[in-house]
Length: 282
Image (tube, rainbow, N blue to C red; front, top):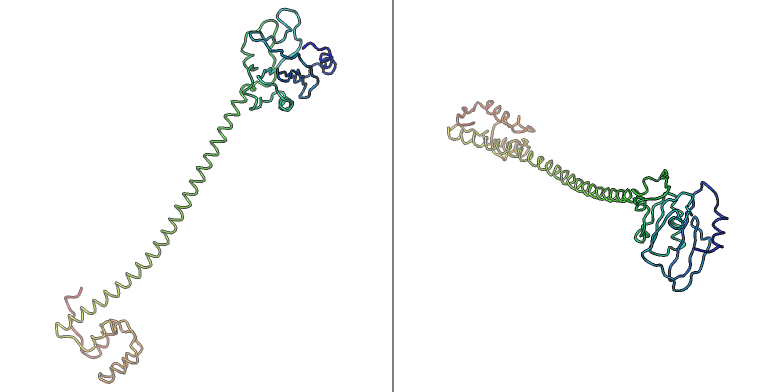
């Protein structure tokens, strides 16, 4: 850059010592315009001759106008980068807005051909002092961000897995509750079946007892009450009328009672017509 007008702008407007500035200059063969930005704002331009091309095989010198010419840079330099494209005013403003320790935007990273972190590894000559910029983590920041992105992605994956596990557990709980209800219903049916079996067992016992008495010749007229038609039933008026027309007055005492083993044995005792105990009964 050999423009007295740009030199005057830079030296007159930004002379403050102990103050950091973001300096950016851009140029391309297509635009043929050299642009200078300070702190994200364009401060000057210069048109270059048509057909001017950058030559290869040169040397990049930082902190000096040219090697060994005595024009050293009397200040501090930080985060110097060179890009393989002409940055737009918006991109330069974004670099400035990112701040002193800001990270290079991802969309510009692929164009960064000379990187500050690589410069720090090169051999230096002259009087060069390292200073603490309080941005020691600058080089590690992209790595840290990548790790953070991976951690966030892993967290999202774990949350999805956890939600699926919760859904599966809810389904298992629903099936368990449904099974419990079925077990309760089955237990109720089983109890009813037990009751039915008990009644059937009692009826079978009574029938067996009647057969046993008949076999021994000890069956009386009252043993008919052991049959399912009467046993555990209420002695009704109709039955009372049937019996009083053919049997004796004992039936008068039975009206309204439930016919059970004890009742049958009692009336048989009153009728003096008891049967002997049947040894074959269990």
